[in-house]
Amino acid sequence: MNQQATFTRMQDGKIEDWMVIGAAHKVHFGGTADRFINMLKALENHTLGFSCNQLHHALMTATLARRSGASDEEIVIALCHDMAKVINVPNHGPIAAEMMKPYISENAYHVIYNHQAFQGEHYYQYLGAPTDLRKQWVDEPWYDLACKLVDEWDAEGFDPNFEVDSLESFEPLMRKIFHDSPVPL
Ligand SMILES: [Fe+2]
Image 1 (tube, rainbow, N blue to C red):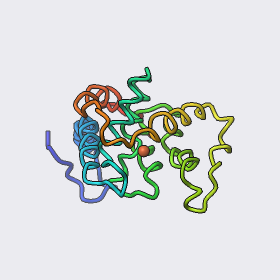
Image 2: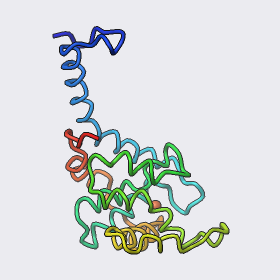
Image 3: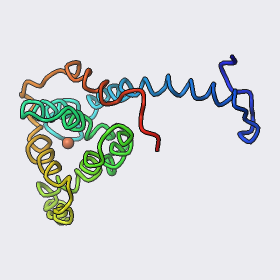
């Protein structure tokens, strides 16, 4: 079988082409966990004025989650909640949520999508923005998890002297959640 499709216009594609493309995509899906792990590693280059770099922050957030008895999915979203800051900071929550969407629950998706608005309770007064944005979601089924992630793990996760668990220690969980069979969108 050809290793690449032969069409130059999608309108001309044949089943053989799409079988090649499908097989290549399956291989690509298998690299998702590694791509996310590499994004986490890249966070080490971003300190953004905080007291620790963003990789340490991600690891501390996930370590606090794991030590409090969080589920595997909760630990992984805690680890990855800020990973999109390597791409774009202002809307890093929605970007990360969309990247993880095929692999995580709807509740976890909403938690990550909106985590910055929840976090605003702790600092938006310094930006002249409302600090009570989270109130609008108080009846949502993911509200309590969002409060826990933001208040108990994320907001607490900026101590450069805290002994974090290693990124390697989270890799089995990353590979479990970000497997090679994402839910089609
Ligand atoms: Fe964070």
